[in-house]
Length: 155
Picture 1 (cartoon, helix red, strand yellow):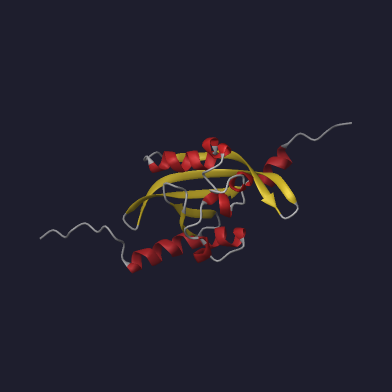
Picture 2 (cartoon, rainbow, N blue to C red):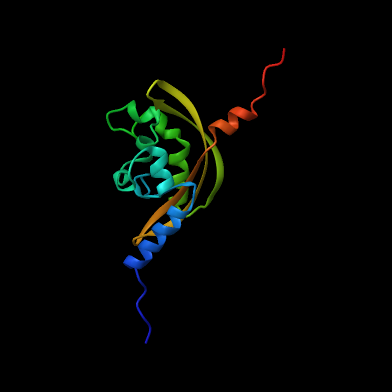
């Protein structure tokens, strides 16, 4: 007798997924097709200064402090700049089933002292999470690395 395919992961499978993501030092998020966070690993939570549970249901641009997420009352996904957002484009591609290998993305982020450009290496793969098509998004902050590689003025 064949068993029915599982659509919902068991608690043990969810726990195993969380442990796997938490063991990774990279900033990892499971997001829905609207870039809303379903699950964040410890590295992401630590980098963002919040508990993983507090990040759930928030949109990527808001937790990454994207400058454009504050340009419209609708938040992330609602400003003119969001139409060409690299992270949103990557999430949309992965939601359609495409794997996105590492891409270098620039983002203007809000800091306590103003704004600055941040650089991220981003990868995404389609991922079924709790029976729903989702995206496993990995981000590496490459801001310092990019700055180190810039040619230094001579003179």
